[in-house]
Amino acid sequence: MLDEVLKSFLSLFVIMSSFASIPVFLSLTSNMDDRQKAKVASHGVGIAAIVLFIFLFFGQAILSVFGIDFHSLKIAGGIILSIMGIDLVFNLSPARKGYESSPAIVLIGTPLLSGPGVIVTTVIFVKEYGPLVTTVAALAALALSWLILWGSRYFVKVLGKYGVEITSRVTGILLVAVAVEFVVAGVKAIVSTS
Image (cartoon, rainbow, N blue to C red):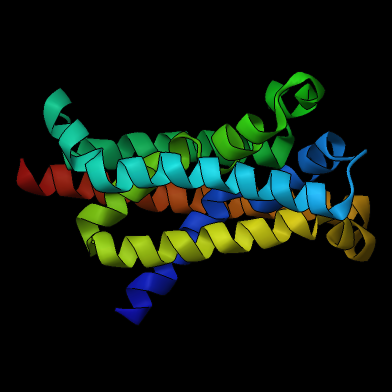
């Protein structure tokens, strides 16, 4: 069980790509004191948690309603994650470039922390490892994401602007690797059952 929790936690944390949210968070909270920044981080992670846990508990039912096969979801999730990873590596997203006009809490909560990749991955992990393992992993990933947002100015001081950018791009590469695993597993499962 510990191995499953660790694998799920690392995957969810990478997909949340908290380091990629640092520039957005710093810009949106530039005129706030530490207490206000902590509040924005808490609200953002809270919204991310609500989105994540809706799909953690009701994701399977949603799949059943739409008649979506689990292996097809894995392939679709892999495609979504690969696009997100490529976006992080090449910094293509217009959402991150124009973040000044977006409401802080909504933007940080979703899609930055709990976007399509997290939603799909959560549903997959519930099916593969069960709700308990996924819940523990999700709580740990959300807690670490909150710490990263709250301490974002320290990360920038230690790593520098370019260090944060490099960390974000490395996260993107890891995200593409997770995506490939999903697609390969989904294709193998479909081929073996046909």
